Length: 488
Ligand SMILES: Nc1ncnc2c1ncn2[C@@H]1O[C@H](COP(=O)(O)OP(=O)(O)OP(=O)(O)O)[C@@H](O)[C@H]1O
Image (cartoon, rainbow, N blue to C red; front, side, top):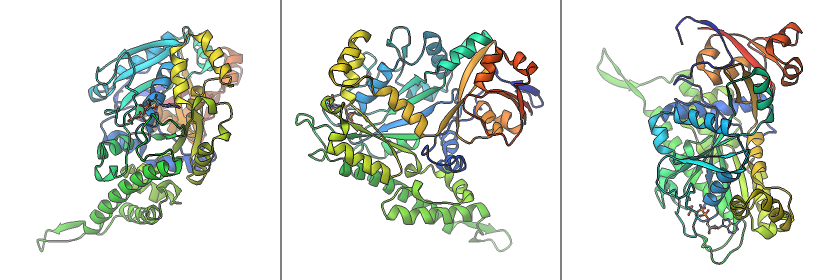
């Protein structure tokens, strides 16, 4: 983008490596302001830049599937990426192209991209790196540590509105927003001290925006449980403690550094303690507050920090600051009445206590469904006393619970869905497309989805007075169709 460009951007802009990353939110019940503060505190942006993943093309939420070994993570991952009737072939190509346009390291890291085609409800995948993947599946097996490298799957978020807009605008491309799923290896007690597959996996968790923690709620004597019995409370405690230990470690090192920070006095040639900047002071007080709460066994996200403190600590990307959804993995016979399973009840209670969400699913059933032709799936679900697969719910719950919203850009080149955080202002939403749009934001020509459809085009919406000129303080609404004016 030129240094001085007065422009508008809504569709077909050139993709550049400076795309601003996505972020996710803790809970749908949080206020927009709190959600935005959370975004800063979770350090999502910092993580992307720190990890060299700033060449991000699509605004996808990155959810990490975590849990103890052998609880059903890979089974769930496979089921999600193989099963979701998420995108048309055109959408699939668009998502895939976006993904392939990413940096080399990202490409290498990615094991597979799988997207289910709407027309066939079947599997079309591309294996990028043959590692643990066989026939487009991550290994799922009855022995711990079957997952060694994180598998990454990209699934488009289905959105009927996208097709309507694309048709009206006669767009050449239709690009859905997507969700990236990372199947992270099983964590065990002592991971923060390098036990099991240790720190490597904690750093995998650091890279994701939100955590889907699979909790084993199915009994099966043939499937080894690392701690000898199915016990959701103990499983959740183990994972939480490892995340807490890892955060405590990091905080301790950082506080130490802040305390010992010294600069050289050029006149007397000796090192003297540095006076902390306001930002560093805020970081220190924020970290001290979090440290106290972590020592109590509670997650960092439960600490009530001031805005400036949240901002100051964001670069640390603390693990327990990330929003969590607990996925109670039940056996097929529990699907119809999951509430009858005491393990599920326990997970529900803990999820509430830990300010997190919860979804009940049977990874095994979902995996089996993925293997069946469409017509047999309905029958199979009926035989289990349920009417629909739990996967759509899981993705939707992830999207909703994290407080995400969608806005659209549309034109003859492309119609695209963008993921933003609830409560984001117009410049912030523009920044999701490109940081320059945010920096040079002038105004956003905005029309609601319904008004756009009623008018048939942006031009007619403008003529009819349905197009609003929104300024810097405008909070973007779900389904807004936007055209940004900016000057950089
Ligand atoms: N809901 C369920 N009911 C019964 N069996 C299940 C269920 N979910 C998963 N399983 C079985 O549990 C075993 C372990 O599953 P999986 O390999 O997905 O675990 P994992 O958490 O990915 O393990 P690891 O971390 O060791 O890779 C598999 O045999 C799988 O078929």
